[in-house]
Image (tube, rainbow, N blue to C red):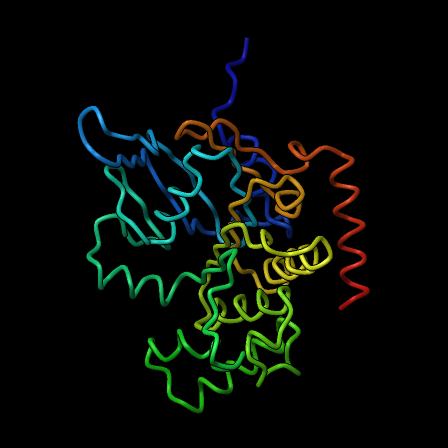
Length: 275
């Protein structure tokens, strides 16, 4: 009798198969036996209990799990926002799990774009200025910042909203600005934490369609943390957490119910019409 393949083997054979039939893309994220413990002694909380995972360049991965499953902690570690208690994390071949604060900030600025549920835009600055902000920290010259900000806002469908303040934009448009900001420094990895949580269903479909376009058309690796199966349905691969462990890792077509997938396809078609 054949042994059951390890967690992730199905995804390796399915979701990670290159679309052009060639060699597998390079590994972008590689974590091994990652743990995170908050507190000590009897008060210790084991948020992650030895997680190992590989994500290749160009994948679109959804991370799911109930509250307290460890998915948000894992997101923070992948985003270089915190250090693991033990284990290793290599991003684009660089071991980052033990870098200092300043070194992590540099990694975040150059290699990772973040999108959050609450948008996190500066209220008194325009869409263009919000997108320019990470380039300011990166030392990009003024003229190049302006050119790049206009370019990415056009890319996310807001070329006619450059001078608008967040208060003058809808929720979906604000999230598009946040995505543009995440793209500003040409980061190869886009991480989104419940990116549709504050949006209506139509705006949610538009944002997820934008993520899919960035992934398919520009090769950006997208990792989305969500509790919503309709959001996970947009991804190629679904990784499920429970009690600080990965309990499932499969192509989304094997995880998402057919009725949900049909609804998402309908939403995608409607999003293309709105675009």
